[in-house]
Image 1 (cartoon, helix red, strand yellow):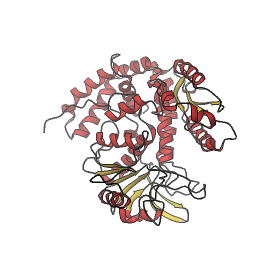
Image 2 (tube, rainbow, N blue to C red; image 1 turned 30 degrees about the vertical axis):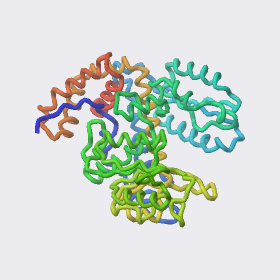
Image 3 (cartoon, rainbow, N blue to C red; image 1 turned 180 degrees about the vertical axis):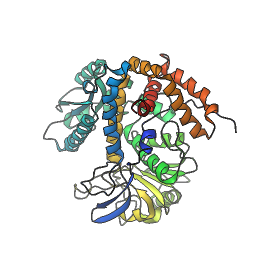
Image 4 (cartoon, rainbow, N blue to C red; image 1 turned 90 degrees about the horizontal axis):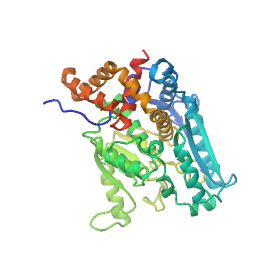
Amino acid sequence: MAYREYHDQIGGINHWLFSQEDFKHLISRPFRGEEYTNVINGSGVVKGEQKYPKGYQEMIIPELKRRADFFREVPALKDINAADAKVLTVLIGDKDDPAVAASRSYVGMKGATTKQCGLSSMMEEFPSTVTSAEMYERLAQWNRDSSISILMFQLPFGGKAGKEIDATALCNRIALEKDGDGLNQMTLGLMSLGAERYYDCCTPSGMVDLASVYLVREKGARLRPDGIASFGGLEVLVAGRSNIVGEPLFNLLKRFDATTLGPLHTRTGTGGSSDKDTQRRIYTELSKRADIVFGCMGFHPYKVHPDTEYFFTADMLKEGCLIIDASTSFRKDGRKPYGDVDPSARSKAAAFTLETGGVGPGTVTKLVHQGWRGMLYQNIDKVRNAVEDNKATVVSTFTKLLSSYAGSSESDAAGNAENLFYRAISKDSHPVHAVDALEAIFPELMK
C-alpha cells in the first residue's frame, strides 16, 4: 500500500509519556474496603496505597515544569518565564453558598496543580449580585491581558447570578486562544469537526487520553501521530450527551476511528418508543457489545433498574471491557461518590477508573497542560523561531512518528515530515502546529 500523507495535528506529550519505563498506568489500590488490581490511574498519588510509583498526572505535571525550566537553554525561548503566565479561574457565588462549595474545592485543586507545573494560578471571585454587564467588561479585559495564559468560568454560578447570567453567552466571549476549558461553543464545534483549534474540551479529551494509555501500553494499539491511540476495530459506547462531555466525546471518538455506539440518553428507544422497558433493553443490547464504555450520564432523575441507582450493572457489560467512568455524583448521603457503573460490575472489566483518582485528575491534568500550551500561544513568534532553529530535529522526529504510524520506511515519510515542518513555522498556519512541533521535539532538545 502506498504511503498516504498525514495532514492532521502532530506531536503531543503522550509520545513521551508512553515511552517512560517508570510510568505504570495500572495500579493496585484498596478502595472502599475492596482490593483492586486493574485500576486506570489518573492521579498517581493515592495516599501511599499504590504499589507502582507513577500515574498519569504525576508523570505529566512535573514534566511540564521540567520543560518550562529548560526554556532558558533554548535561545528563542529564553525570555519566556512560566511563572509570569497565569491560569485564571473565575468563581461567582457567595462564600456561604453551599451550591459553590464543591467548586471552591475544585478551584483549589486546579490551582495547586497549576503551580506544580511552573505556571501561576489566579482566581477572581465575585459575589452572586454581580451583573452580566460587569462580567462582560471584566472578560474583555482578561482577553486583552497577555499575561493570562487561559481563563475559565467555574460553573455553575451561585445565587442570583446563577439565575440571571447567561453562562453560555458569557463563555462564548472567551477568546479562543484562551479558552483552555473548552467552554466557548466555537471551541466545541471545531473539536467535534476535527478542525484546527487551540484546545480541546478537558473532560472528554482527558477520558480519551486515559483510554489511549491503556490501549497502547496494555493492548498494543497503534499510536497516532497526534499522540492518541487508534480506536479502529473497537466498538465504543458513550453514555450521556451533555454539551461539554458526552457529545464532544462522541465526536472525538469518531475521529479516532472508533465504531461508536450511542450516545445513550434519556430518550433512547426504538420504533418511536422510549418507555422504560424498551430503553432498558436497548441500553443493554448496546452496552453488551461495547469493548470500551465511557460513562458520563451523571445523576439521572429516573431509575433505570428497580434495585440500584447505578446506570450500568454487571449483566450489561461485556467480559473484558474497558470502563472510563467520568460520573461522580454525591447522591444518597451527600458524601460518598457514585459513578455510572455499579462497583459489582467491575469484575467484568479488564480495567476501569474509580470514582476518585481517575477521570477527575485526568481532567485537571489536561486543563493544566492546556494552560501550559496557552503560555506558548501567547509567545507564538518565539515558538515558531525555536521550531525553525531546530529544523533537523523537527523533521527527524516527525519522520519517525509518521513512518511508525503508517508502517512504512522513513524515506517514504520524510517528504511529508518536511512539509509539516514548513506548516509549523508559517505565520499563515494555525499556531497549534508550531506548539505541537515544539512539544514533540522537547525530549530530544533536553537530552
